[in-house]
Amino acid sequence: MLPLRAKMNGTEEREQMHKSLGRRFSRRSFLAGTGAAAVGVTFAPKGSWGVEEPKLNFYNWDTYIGETTLGDFSKAAGIEVKMDLYADNDELFAKLKEGNPGYDVIVPTNDYVERMLAAKMLLPINRGLITNFKNVDPAFQEAAFDPGRKHSMPYMWGTQGIGYRKSAVSSPPDSWKVLLDSDEYSGRIALLSEGIIEAALKYLGYSYNSTDPGEIKQAEALLIKQKPHIKVFAEDNGQDLLLSGEVDLTMEWNGDILQVMEEDDDISYVVPKEGSNVWQDCLCIPAGAPHPENAHKFINYILDAKAGAAIAEFIYYATPNKAARALLGDDYNKNPAIFPTEETLARCEPSLYLGEKVERIREESLTRIFAA
Image 1: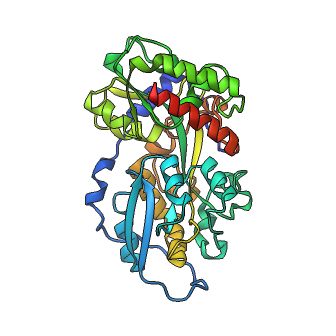
Image 2: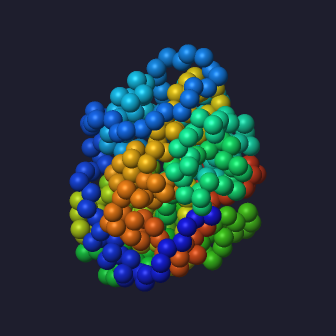
């Protein structure tokens, strides 16, 4: 499903990843800067919804948009954007499960797109209004989790792995073992609250998407045993804990670690040798969206080449926007921590929606882990 890159060994990956960082801004400052001049984009023709008020309610991951994207869109479209933040897919799903409180565009990960489709929580997208879909790399124009791209547009993709402080480790970590099955860095480890069972499954040699209750139970037992050595289960802020020195190793998304590496050259990132998750976040319109026409305009804007390039350059995740990549330099396009090697991707798996029964088993395991 995802494009594969030229091969590079692990040491070269880490060195290249560090040397290629050259962005000018910290993502944590983006909320202060929403008034830059609008880039040159065109908007799709009007839909059939009638006249909408010039407003858009955006529900997004924290620090997951360009520094000036919202201000640029507002200036170009005359639409005021209000953005609320969520920490993980579970929070997004729970917020919308009982009814949409007023959001127009959301950014779920691929398996949650599938889960929301099963629960009839997403509106179909009118592809005729997304004229910039032509900019999307052909590898992302189809999706097994959303056949025909009827309910989602690709936003960003990447991996999950280990961020670490080089001066604090005896050797560069290459396995989930240092986080999940060792006391070497006791009290200096952060784990994400999302994906820990899956990471444990990979470490134990099982599929990231295992549905076997026995295998899930083994992953649970491993994590409960390791819990005394874990400083915190972080809500997508492991990179900040690493940067501040509160932890020396953290489970995190690749782009989050890349963004703090520019602030501290003692920080690096690696995908464990057992493999991990390769994910895709999507732009979707939730059922009950009050401004569906504006939502289409916003999604179309995000897929514009210049707007997409500005987002990718700022947040440093892999964009599926081929036209946007063409506007970016080698420090982005040839960075193997953004676009992993074929060898790395071969060890990774996408998250799948495994049905509510398996979701319930995993959620019950998580509850026991957190309560232990």
